[in-house]
Image (cartoon, rainbow, N blue to C red; front, side):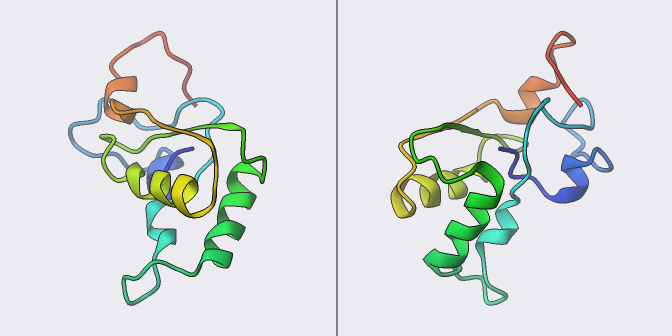
Length: 109
């Protein structure tokens, strides 16, 4: 699950330290910004569950690997998915997209 903003997921933008635009092949997008209300607080559990279900489904045992650009901001969704919503197999790709784009042989879209 790609937690970057939609323009990054769509390959329209990238950060200067990331080698390429795009996404990891097969990734779904659920931006970190969708976690929060306009006041900067976490949305309520029901709304977060709805967002998660739309992105990754409701199988709580499904492996979910999260990434962003550097492995930092995706941790917010990891916390919500595992601690609040009960997903059991949530992982963070700590190298995230910055690392992924340095290998010319990895699948990208």
